[in-house]
Every structure is written in structure tokens, then in C-alpha cells.
Image 1 (spheres, rainbow, N blue to C red):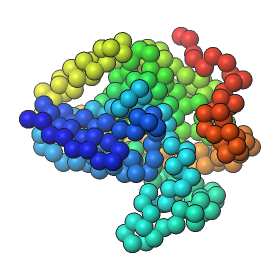
Image 2 (cartoon, rainbow, N blue to C red):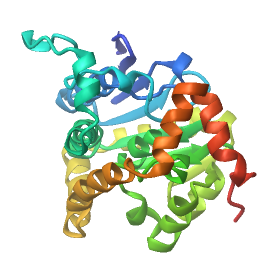
Image 3 (cartoon, one colour):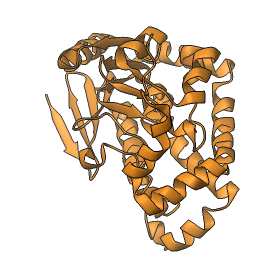
Image 4 (cartoon, rainbow, N blue to C red):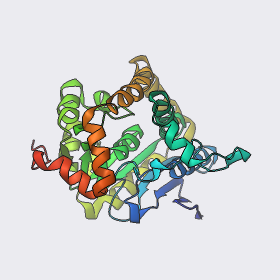
Length: 296
């Protein structure tokens, strides 16, 4: 039996023991804003609540999985992501002023991080299906998932570390080890999906034309297992990472990213963003680096 519903920014479908959550902002390359993050959290919690669901597939509509955080929307988002939420009447203009403080920057990113780590907190395993761009905030979301399957030609990385800060959700060291984490974050260089799999950022990579079939087969394989057993194995591995400090590191990652936001290079990027627009500001930032891809 198939069940489907849509919200403003995502689709939620249940069929054959698998819940499929689709980020649905293709015109924005599925960039993350507060409303999308909140809707994603609710969809994940609903998937966890449904007894018919054994596992979750997280994917993006259109040409990309997720191209990062929506920097335009985050200029005007109220703290709750909803102007007037719960009758509080937040004024986005006031929030823009408040967000200039270091602590408010941390507060905002902690809200995002809490939504992203719902992926880890739910009992059921989540598979990230990566195609096209998986950049910046897209990697924050993908690497919180239990399994990542990537198209061979996917573009994976965090180029914002060239000027703007550090990933506010940091799974890089756990997935690839300290040297490769530094190699990727110190340069902001990118990996194709095939090379990301070689390093451990993905568990499988396949030609883009085979991605749907590969992820469906993996999800159906997980759906053969009792959800209670899936939960046991997911949670024991997650506990192992917690014993390695994964939760404490996430708090430090947010605070360190906020520190990076004070860098002169980030202020320059913000000025370029206001003067030139996002695409031109990114081109100016990345032009000195030439070819962005690491060749293994």
C-alpha cells in the first residue's frame, strides 16, 4: 500500500516498508532554510512513529541533492523560522540586527543542527541518496545519515570553508579520519561521488542512471529486517560514536563556525554577496582555486 503527502517544501511517501522523504525546492537546488529544516524534522519523526516503516530514504528533487544553506532566506528568517509563530510576533528586521551578535549566530546554527541530527536520533536507519550537488549544508545533512549512496558524478564538498567558516555539523573526521578531513576542509576542494566512496564518505557509488535502483534495492533489503533489530544496530553504532565524542564535537563545531564568521574573508564574501549576488560572489571566491576536484 502506498501513502503520500506533500508539504510546502518536501514530499513524504511510504511504500513497501520504506519512507521516502524528498527535499522539494528544485528551483533553489534544495537549499536548506528554516521552514524546510522544520518540515524535515517532522517528517523524520513521523517516519519513526509509523510501524509500517522500517527505514527512510532521503533524496532531493531536480538536478541536486542539496546545494547548501539558503543564504538569501537566512538573512530574513525569524528565530523560529515562522514570523509570528505561537503569537510571538517575531520581526525579521529585528532578527537581522540581533543575528549580528556572536551568541545569536551560535543560537541560530544550534537550531539548524538540532533539526539535522534528528536523522541520527530517530531509531530507524536513514539512507542519503546523493546526486548532483551535495555541498556545504547538504553535506551536513547527508553525513548525519546512517548510509550514503552516491552517483559517481555527484559533487561533494564544503567550498565555503575557503572563506566563511567551518561545517557547523562535523562528521568529516569520523568518516575519513583527520588527515583527509583537513585536506578537504583546509582547501574547500570537492570530490566526485566515486572518490567520496573510496574515502568513506559514501558506502556505495554507482552510475547516476543506476542510483534509483541501487538505493531502492538497499532500502528493500533493510525493510526485510524487524525495525526493532534495525534500531538495536543503529543505536549501538551511534553510541560508539558518542563515546568517541561525536555529540560534544558538534557543539564545538557550531561555536567554531561562528568564530570563523568573524574572519575578514567572510565579511568580504558577505559584501560581495550583497553587491554581486550569490552566484557571482561564489565565482569570485572560487576563481583563484581553479579546478575544484581532488583526483585520487
